[in-house]
Length: 204
Length: 164
View 1 (cartoon, one colour):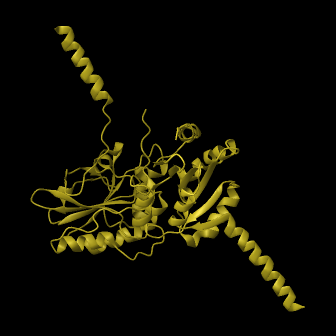
View 2 (cartoon, each protein chain N blue to C red):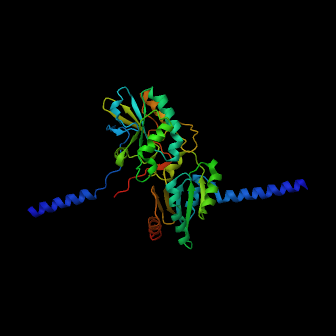
View 3 (cartoon, each protein chain N blue to C red):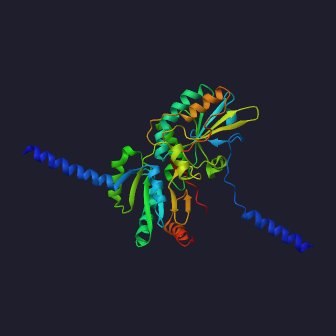
């Protein structure tokens, strides 16, 4: 009997070790757990810090990806326009500085200073929050709406419809916020865009 | 006489332009899909890249090596650039500077909501990404990842060795 129990225990360990970690992140409609990540100014930032926010424009972006850099001015413009309306931008760098040294905290500080970011630019060590959202590339945007239940994910994808030319015709994030402001859900609520793969930490 | 000179310059210039356009031509998604569909028993390895994408540029030699190694086989490696069409000259300069041998095309599509899901529902849009197609065998495999040579060759051979 004891042998069977031991066998079962061993088996369950083997099974759980073999079960792949799901890379399914939050889906549209999910309540997003708060986080606390270090900003370029050294202070930690959480969603709970924003008592008056109606929601958040959460953007995974970085120092090196040309597409992400091509969006920096548009991200700054988004923050300027929508912070006042209750939807501030929060930027998170999903890349590992061990893989790409130009993604270091110091270089993030420098980039934020050079471009005069008006929003937090957060470090995500070990990709913990990046994986929670299942962000795949930079820039990758997640629009959250604050509700009584918590911060609900309402839109995933591109900022606008021109990741490569900088001459957008459709501004997905702005349209999504406009929908939320009129009590509707965004349509589309998921879009695709060309971007740079995330620089994942090499498993040791 | 002067007119003849101009005519000659125009001829030479347009010939050069034609060569340039041939080396790096534009292709619509429809055009690309038709080509893959009509490929018969050819295995297409379609690598999506851009001049600005460092990991894409880093893996290009593996795709060059694959084509050269299986030169006598029905294999066709295509480098399909996602650079905007206005950068056609920049792509051509890049191709020449790197001395690429594989065929290089620029995807002439602006609407990412159209072409990304059409190429694969699994694609987030991140590059590098590679599509393996063999119409004869009914194979279409999409990989959003970087390849080293061994991984690339393994993927190619797994298709070749598949029974119809």
